[in-house]
Image (cartoon, rainbow, N blue to C red):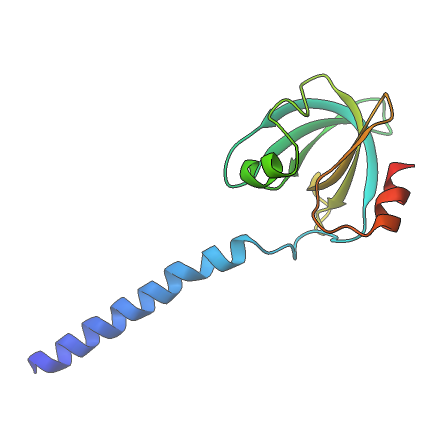
Length: 140
């Protein structure tokens, strides 16, 4: 009888271990975004949260009624961005930019940043491995 309880306990522990690991794998999915379909959006940076595991950009976008819609835009990790030339001062509150984003598929005001074009014309890239043709099209 003691052996049965021991095996039951081990089976339960194994099941919990697998269940706990599942969200970690799902965390890095891009399935919720219209990945590869970059949509340009002009607006003003409200705030940037330079935090692990992903940065967040709060973005104010003019809407059709003359008001502003707040968008939550996810980005890569600060570690990755630092390696490709970004700093926590690349985007600042008040910056008026055109952000290329991969929108959320469910229609909410959110997405994933692919690029940012500043009023002086310079563009910073965000998504790794973008083909040159797509990057050039997004910059126009």
